[in-house]
Length: 455
Image (cartoon, rainbow, N blue to C red):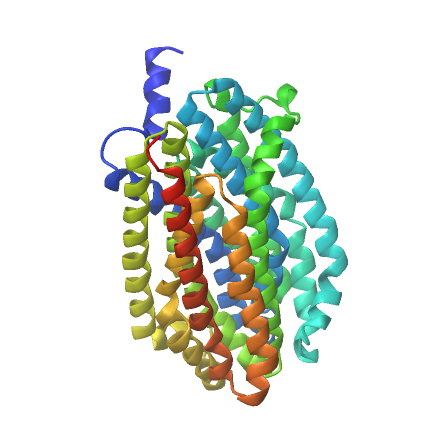
């Protein structure tokens, strides 16, 4: 590799093993947060466009699908986290053969997961929405949106796994550029297909699929033109059993943890559905702002995973401890400030999605209870990420199963019937965050004391 190529690669790859951590964590996390927010904007634009230019039923149809979509994709998103950890660990060890094998193993996982999600999504769209007691005036539109949305799953997976490879080397900027382009295309298509062609939920779903195709194409182009072991070579695509096993050991528990959240949220969504289409629409509008705040936390969580896995691979223990402290502090500050801002501006924030007073009322209740306390979730997100970076992925997943799925199901089916009301239903979020956070933080401190003990 000549000097010009080295300089070009150095401009996007980050040295996580040396120098100041704070500025590098911010340089890693902020573009990643922006990328995730842009992905969510695909869905937010869908909701806003149909809410303003179609109907409240169309708004509810699109919004009610968020928990179903998360349930379907979270296992594979977790595996992409496992891939990022494995590659980052190899970078810390300077193992170029391992990086190359892992990169091409990821390609096989990408194609398999995208195809599987496409088929399963098409088959279960109606049954799962019926199980969630989706109202009659919403279900047909919801099924249509979900089926078209899942046609884009192969492209969604290509982007996410490709971005995971780039993140492992500290490059979060180029995935952001891909989403900026795709986001502009998505917004333009939504406005044209819904306002001009009057296609309602079908229009916004088609716009999202095309946007996913664009972002996938751009990420493949980037990987095809990478240098060194990160370069994607079609003829090299295949499975390395060693790398696959490592990815699945970390990725499957992380994916299960995400799925557990989604399963619990599917049941909570079913409980919300019982309050009617206005409650569904209001909850969907408020949920967008929870996603934006969560993605900031998730970005610092990804920073914790990647920085800790590289530094743990290089046996730089003190840097691992410092990374945990800094990512926790930054996530709490950033998420807390956003929570307060959105709740303060809730009237304007909700008006972007709807002008219905009834829908507004439900959205405001959710924002005042759930969004205002969301920074509590930083406790288990960062602690769990640190554990995954150290190679312990199953423990936070198990603790999360209890702290979210079991507890939330108990609340929905035992507490809510005794104390009914939309506001009481929403209280389970802060309660589960406190309990889960305490459990995962304790686990982290026990594990790190064992691993970081002087030899």
